[in-house]
Length: 334
Image (cartoon, rainbow, N blue to C red; front, top):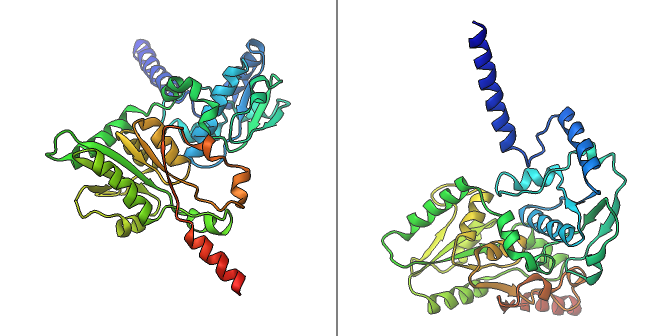
């Protein structure tokens, strides 16, 4: 009887241990265990760095990559906040440990705000307990360790398998297919860009031009469209050749599924936004992006630099700013 009970206890313990292992990068940690871990960290480390966790997936990825690169550059251990772990751990095989809230609140942090581009002064940031902040996505922070960033942002196997199954399905009987992922950022940008940032988002002409580039260069091209404005895409993207597929067919796509599809394509057409940037960065290949999408006096240009946002080898197609120019002319008349 005693042996049987002991065996069941060992089984349950083993199962629990494996479960905790699988969640090592998430914030689901017992308070008492976090307290023990925090003491070990403080004793064994000469401080550690973290970064704010703001925005959605693309922003979170940019913040993670920036923290990883700058902490390494300055010789400190990086820790991510629980909210970032909750965003990224279910999708990527990230390795940075999570800083529990009970530990974070006990530390006297040095706050350090970053621009969204690398500066020389960031190579020698002083402080053992530094909390970085800002919307940081620029490749200028981390491209020098490109292979490490790609390793950190490796998608979980089950997500990859689901995306590859979708790509095989739409390929059908075609041979030697070239996949081009298309990300069309709409949503709040439809109103935010013209009304706040004095800019535009991708229009039908831009997408037609970008897709024509790939159709002319490669045979058997298949376009896979992901978007947070899919109805607009289906009405405005030319599918007369039958080579365009939408990620929400035959079922509603998730963010992880959409991203994985884009990352596993050969090439990328992005519009604006960090989600599209990361899709192109992970996919490799050729990336076409919308450029010069703001008026010269746009306040957006105080926090954004085109040359720091897109890799030099990527292909920029200038936006059509005429809708904004017409609106400005109309306002002057009235």
